[in-house]
Image (cartoon, rainbow, N blue to C red):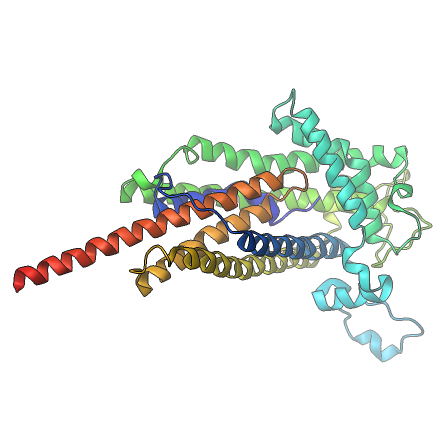
Length: 416
C-alpha cells in the first residue's frame, strides 16, 4: 500500500487543463500517419520509461520506505563492541539511501531492490480484479476501499516478505494464517478509508469548483486567476490530508503488520518486536500504540524518503520528456519539412516548447495512472492525440508566418 507521491494523481491531473489554453480546442486540421520507425522508437522509449519508473517507485517509495518504519534499527555490528564506541551515537540504517542499500544488499544480495516483486504484482492484479468486479454494482468510492480490505491477506504477506530475510519459499507459501488476517483487519480498514478521504474530499472540492468542466481557452484573465487559486486549494487540501491522515494510517498499518511477523522469521532490518512492550497478549500491536511508538525522528526520516523518491521520479519524467520530445519533434519535422519550407527557427522553438509541455504531462499521467491491464489502449490514444494536435499546431504556425511574410511584402510594395 504505497502512498506519496502516487496518491495525488487526481490533483495533479488538474494541471493538464492549463495546457488547453495554450493549444486551443479546435480539432486537428490534418491527419498524420506515424511511420513505422517512429512508432517503434517511441514505443521503445515509453517501455524503458515505464520499466525504470516502476523500479524507482517500487524500490525507493515502497521497499526502502518500509524499512523506515523501524525506529530502533541501528547498524548491525557483530562481535564485542569496544566501550569507547558506545559513546558514539549510532545512526539508523535507514538514515540515508546509501546506508539502506548497503545493508539490504549485504543481507539479501544484489536483487534486494526487487524483493517481493512477485507478491506485489499478484497483490495489485488481485486488487484490479476485485475492483473491476465490485465496480459493476458499486460506485468507485465504495468499491476501492472494499477491494483494498479484501486484499488484506496479500498485502500482509507482501509486507512480511519485504521486512524479513530472504526465504526459499515461493510467494504463495508465504500467505498468512486466518488468525493473523483478522488481527490486521482494523488497521487495514482505517488505512483504506484514509486513502479514500485523500481521493474523495479534494475531488469533491474540485467538482464544487467545476474545475473539470471549465474551458481555460474561453476564460478571461480574472477567471483564469480564480481557477488557478481554486486548483491550488485542491492540491493543498490533498497534501494536508496525505500528511495528517494517510501517512499516520499507513504507518500504523505497516507497524501492525510487522508485529505479526512469525517468530521463526528474522527481520532484514532489526527492530524491537515488542515495540517497547506494547504488543498485546494475542501478539498484535494496538492501533494507537503503533503510531505513538513511531517517534518524530522516524517520521521525519520517512517524509524525507518520500520526498527523495518523488524527486527521483520527477527527474525521470523530465528526462524522458526531453527524450520523447526530441524523438517526436524529429519525426514530425522530418515529415513536414517536405510540405512547408517556410518554417522559421522560432517556429521550431515553439514546437519544441509545445512538445515538452504536452509530453511532460502525458508521461506524468502515465506514471501516476499506470495499469498493467488497461493502460495499453489509453497510451495509444494519448500518442495519437499528441501527434494530431502537434501537426495542427505546426500548420497553424505555418499559416501565421505565411500571413506575416505576405503583410511584409505588401507593406514593402506600398512603400516602393
